Length: 78
Image (cartoon, rainbow, N blue to C red; front, side):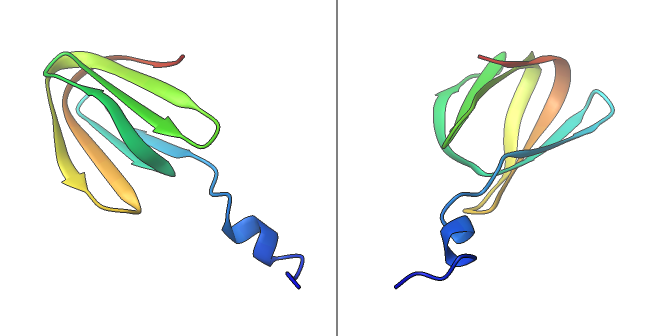
């Protein structure tokens, strides 16, 4: 039998931190749908996000956190 708090361990809400126009830190995104120098599309359990810019790169990629660096021109939930 699952405890009440065990139900929340399965769902991790997305967390997005924007540091100026050069860095975006993301947590809770589990799939990369598109990756290019001008657009990165990431998916979570409930959301899909598009990061548009120039010279974009995934500088850190782990099961918990993604770091995108480059010239960030826009972030949009799609």
